[in-house]
Amino acid sequence: MNKRVQTIYYIATDAIAAAASYTLLFAFRKLFIESEVFGIKIPVRFDNYFYQSLIGYIVFWLLLYWSVGYYKDVFRKSRLKEFIQTIVQVSTGSIIIFFAFILDDTIVDYTSYYQSFITLILTHFTLTYFPRLVLTSRTTRKIHNREWGFNTVIIGSNEKAVEILDELNALKRSSGNRFVGFVSVDNNIEYLAKKMLSHLGSYNRIKEIIDENQIEEVIIAIETTEHNKLGAILNLLEETDVIIKVIPDTYDIISGKVRMNSIFGVPLIEITHELMPAWQFTLKRLFDIVASSIALLILSPLLLFIAIMVRLSSKGPIFYKQARVGLHRKEFHIIKFRSMYTDAESKGPQLSSKNDSRITPWGRIMRKFRLDELPQFWNVLRGDMSIVGPRPERQHFIDLIEQKAPHYRHLHKVRPGITSWGMVKYGYAENVEEMIQRMKYDILYIENMSLFIDLKILIYTVLIVVQGRGK
Image (cartoon, rainbow, N blue to C red):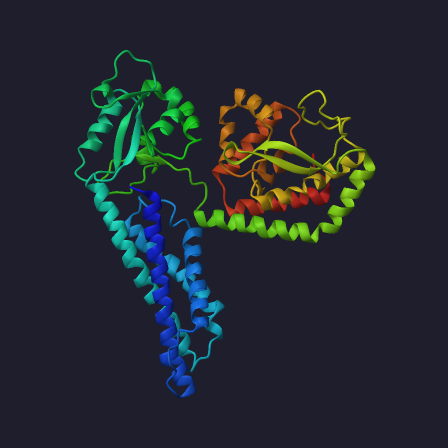
């Protein structure tokens, strides 16, 4: 099981399908439509224009598939779901190609449009889907026959762990779980699961255990008496890329939380890391790049004016760079217009307050209208930040926050932003307690992420800036 090789197979077959589809469409238009328009038989010549268009066509389709996350998880594909996905992908791409290129082509009459579009969509779908079906069927067969599997660890050591192990091992068609061992929650003297699996250690070491054993899936099967540890376990797992599944109780099943991907599988709740569909993440990043580029270009006179005012307001650099923690706890340097005197943190890290004497007179004006944040559009272009996302903090304050609110680590699942739900609702925080209060809105944002929510936050941010209500 080599993910890179499997991904290359899918990309290669999609590229070949796109090339064949374009060639057939090209020949169809030459032999039938253009020949009828000009009244003579138009030969099919594969010249430089054809090959240039062919390359562009292939790149377009591969980028489309990548943007919707098709190549993200090549070993966990459902054949029925893939059929529907391929229909949607091919239909979307064909509509784009039709309006961008075919609509301007030479035609006999309006029926030529229908002929070209039907030829495009039918040939492209057929040539794309059937190689995908072969690859996915081969993968599914090998997983069901236990030839391939995903390294799995079970968190739990007694009755429920043994029960789920027995149920999964008894399946005629494997679900793909290849159990490496179990992780205990309480330090019991004897573990029932020890008769079936190796004891890998306590749940406190789960991240190390995942790295050491190349774990891809974690199944949580803890006892009722251990439920008080569930929050701590999930917090630790949130910083990993593994698939997390939990044994449901009757209420979970009735309330509809359990979603079955396989008729022959065991009912488990999958806790997904996917905050938004892949295509929305792609659009969000594309919007960040386009909007930031336009903002830096249009606002360049204002940026120059602000820079001059910062220079005139007090001695020191125009820009202020500070280490912040971003996506996946990766450190980067945030850029702002300097709004404080140069020796503002001579006594160590401090949060600013409403009547902070360290803020320059011009700095107060900038903060009121959030003008000091404008250089962060450069951070967005670099990929350190997004326009909308939780505000990034320094490691010093993160350590203080996590002592009281360990779930702060959820904020590192997404790129930090110039503005956020927390900033709109709460503004700048003056102490750790206020940071924790603001964090609630940022977690709400992460759990409800969508392009629509981003748009609403941007609208409210603009109103705050225009009205000068920045805190």
